[in-house]
Length: 76
Image (cartoon, rainbow, N blue to C red; front, side, top):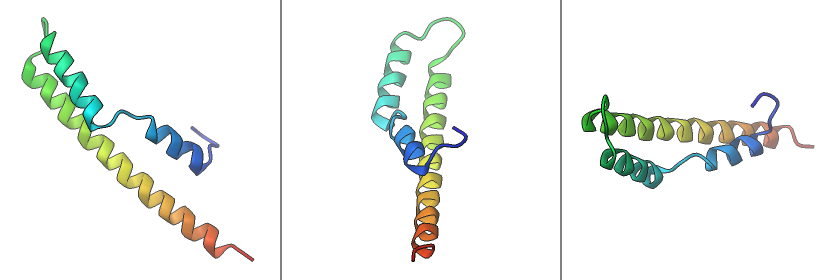
């Protein structure tokens, strides 16, 4: 994503799956859990994914706030 504007980064962030979508994926994975992957492993992956998305959202919000302050301070 090198060279992308903040607007483009935020657009990509909005395309990431949300909590409901991750839960649906978890449910689908649990219903078809096969060899090698336990239900607890699938749940742990889902919990980790949700936590990571939350952290990404927080960092993007902070970045947007910083970028907004920079552009507001660089005005005429």
